[in-house]
Image (cartoon, rainbow, N blue to C red; front, side, top):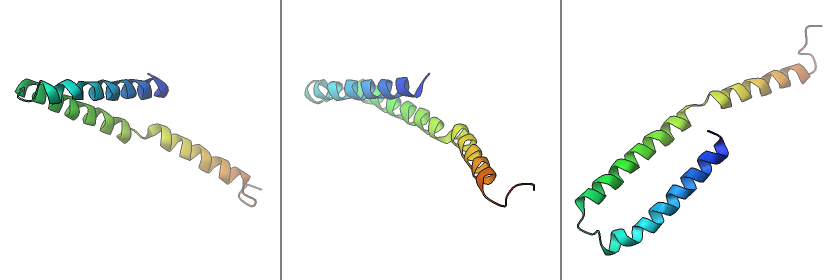
Length: 80
């Protein structure tokens, strides 16, 4: 899934939770099931976000390429 698509999915879910806040406050004040489901969702979303943040392979690869390019372009760093 592309980065742009993930951003829009998260924005849509944020909007959904904002909309759900209204009935939650007005009608579901005593709904234990709703609180359980929201808590489970929050834990799941936090774990997914943490796993994506911890996956830094792309960043490390890009930094390696930048370092190699800098090394090639630095005077006196060549083999000759």
